[in-house]
Length: 512
Ligand SMILES: Cc1cc2nc3c(=O)[nH]c(=O)nc-3n(C[C@H](O)[C@H](O)[C@H](O)COP(=O)(O)OP(=O)(O)OC[C@H]3O[C@@H](n4cnc5c(N)ncnc54)[C@H](O)[C@@H]3O)c2cc1C
Ligand SMILES: NC(=O)c1ccc[n+]([C@@H]2O[C@H](COP(=O)([O-])OP(=O)(O)OC[C@H]3O[C@@H](n4cnc5c(N)ncnc54)[C@H](OP(=O)(O)O)[C@@H]3O)[C@@H](O)[C@H]2O)c1
Image (tube, rainbow, N blue to C red; front, top):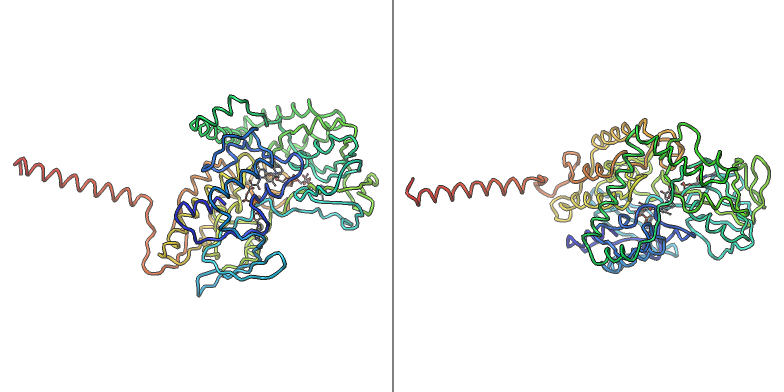
């Protein structure tokens, strides 16, 4: 949607959004579990072009965020560009036509071909639910679903509910489903996470008034959130002197809020498991809810799943419903897209996991771009910021294609390899390297998801393309426009003009 808005701003209307679901919203359309909310302050977790003044909470709940995206789609008339219920199945670059031949699929399985000069892949990073690889999982006779596809047709009232997982999703919905004392919740936890004090607060009427009537206040507030998040990066991920103090204070908070019987399990004790090494979680009343008699944590490792429930090392745990809060597949590419040599998945595998140049371009894939691509995510700030930065970068790259000056461009393998060596060097020895997490390929391999730095650095690196890193197929003669060329030209012509005017003035005065 961000890409579409910016294309429209450029006056480009010849584009189509292919969406496999029936509505816009992505993450916020699909994740309807109880308590689902943003953990980045909402005034920064929205588009820079579309601030909203009427957010009720500092961190918005899913219905409000989904409503935001519906409004944005309506405002920019994006619906007229979207084909819903149309999944992209594959695409193959045709060197002769300099286009991608795509295959798409509608709801009843009909395959529909399509051609595209440019593909922007905006399929999301946390999009495909991951079910755990537990023996016997399909033999369970009760009801089950993944947290990202919450099934409200299945009532939890009076049931024994097993929750597998203890990441951001589980810690948001467990305190809510366990509010009903008839729901017996057993949460199966594998490894601990750092849980920071709550951040969500309701805005006061005065603050809402300021947001509504003082646009400068609204914009300044957003910018301050951005700076605050970057400071968080400094305090937790960058500064080795400060981070132990922050970790100590988080530990203090957890120790104070967690029921005594869980303190040893819940607070990470492994010295390698430093604050921030897995996704930071913010307490959503989770820690105090653990004192409820109808909620208990199970740390015994899961051995298998059977017809009646979950078998752990300490014996069977009977369940009526199993909720898999086991995250997403983040280390593969879901569409069979083939460039001039191989598919995206093959390229990833050859590079030990998702790999891209500036998270956006992949060698041998002309005119193909990945939003939220490899090493663009962050553990401290808004994904949307990175995506907006990427969109501006892509627009500069595709401008000559849209203008008909060039047919295609692709990043060189040398540029991509150099970039990724630098990324992995920066990541080596950082706090993320010692943890098992979805940031890594296969949970333990290469860190493929995270950008190793401030988001300001990502913006700086991607603010304009270095055309010497690209192979270009031109129509005729084409030179990349130097970013300063306009300014230098204007200065030179201006200088020359002023010089001539000066000479003419002196001549008029009779000096020459
Ligand atoms: C529960 C949850 C909470 C989150 N909270 C935050 C937060 O607070 N802050 C933050 O910065 N980030 C958060 N994230 C990350 C979040 O995913 C991103 O911020 C954001 O939603 C990314 O938007 P996107 O459009 O790139 O991807 P998505 O929102 O994932 O959208 C991808 C779209 O592509 C479609 N699609 C996928 N494959 C195909 C295909 N083959 N053909 C056609 N269509 C396809 C999908 O249906 C979907 O609509 C959260 C993620 C989750 C799961
Ligand atoms: N805005 C928000 O607050 C919010 C909310 C939800 C999600 N998100 C985003 O989405 C990401 C994913 O969150 P998520 O909670 O859905 O997934 P997740 O962070 O990947 O957590 C998955 C959980 O399942 C456990 N698990 C996986 N396989 C298992 C197995 N075989 N046996 C036992 N346990 C198993 C994991 O344990 P291990 O830790 O031991 O692997 C982990 O606790 C977050 O990191 C965040 O970026 C954000």
